[in-house]
Image (cartoon, rainbow over all chains, first blue to last red; front, side, top):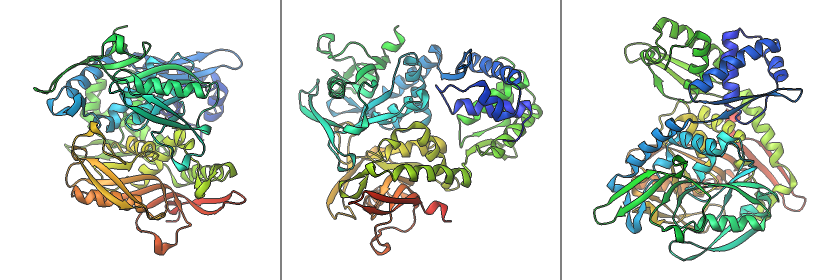
Length: 275
Length: 275
């Protein structure tokens, strides 16, 4: 790269950091990249750090020492996150979203890249300080959420399939009972998709009793992997606590009531905002 | 937002633009946001534009006049794109990726957010100048690619399902014949997922004869929508041109030979790099 003026360097460093979340970059690497003294690089980083923190973009962690450097941790402040989720709740409450069986149509919202970017940052904030190796979801609607969080956390994604596709090689399948309608279903994951001992963050779009998430946890046991966290976009509060299959999870929104006759629903921010 | 110094403003404007690709932002909006004169904003934008273009980040389009402003168009230069795809080809040629039936295991690569970001930028560059309203893919493995392109193009994604799920409402289903193995299959899309007259970019991970893509095109007819482009990550060159169901598509890589005995494959850059 040709030598840049400070103003141009700030632009380049900003995009470089934003594109490499949760990645340690040494001062030496920056100094080499921009053919500049480490002292100048440190001054630049101080400016970027202040803007990122003041404007709620994220944190710029500085690690001292020989193995030191700087790491960008995307974080969305709680007030901004709540503002976004309140908008989501209002949108989800529209009567035309109520489907037979008390389901909510939200596929369109899961198709909007800017909303997904925001939701990914909220999940990334919620789980920023956990040790995680990989994010897991089950097809189909959890996939965009898993990738949105993965982009912010710089983690790979594995997708659990509801069938066993030829293009995946040998796979482990389990049966699980969907908690809400008690049907036996199958899910499977390719043998080579997940290393043993992995620490896994489970992400899904909707949780009723938690049978699907519980199924993913059972699948993880087969791989000797452990659950590092569970995040769901919307949880249904229509399930009594005693019927809920798991306790430790983060939800961003909560469906508290559905009236199938009037198509009125009430959706409130989830447990992430109660802590 | 509090008034920032120029250096801090450059950092903030850079992240603001990067997070809003293909979005027109007026000079007035920037001047208000930063409480600065439009002349200062214009100078800042000139610096950002130069860095973005020199470093291959993308283009900063300036539109003059009352409705004018600035728009960030992510673009990955051809030489950088080719470098990335050549690495992908070498990785995909590893013998342990060959699965029964001549399929290639590439799910792990489709799970890596940094590679997806790059591939999304390549698709976004290939289709940057087409009029597109929405990106369409079919579950499951095309989904991360579709979202990666959508994030760069600032477009919504619709996912065609291989079955008709209760949580989608009324849906249109079609039967199609998979071009390579001649099996009849079903795909469906929720009625409310796609507006009539939409211009649609189809993205998928793998294409043999093109039966699945052709199925998506048939589905689009049912919605009175039109195809604005077709992009596939890897195409199989084992299909003769006469058996190929469509001609106008962009591929990033091409599988030219699979030897099931020796597990040797040859993968080369796709037709995107031949034009």
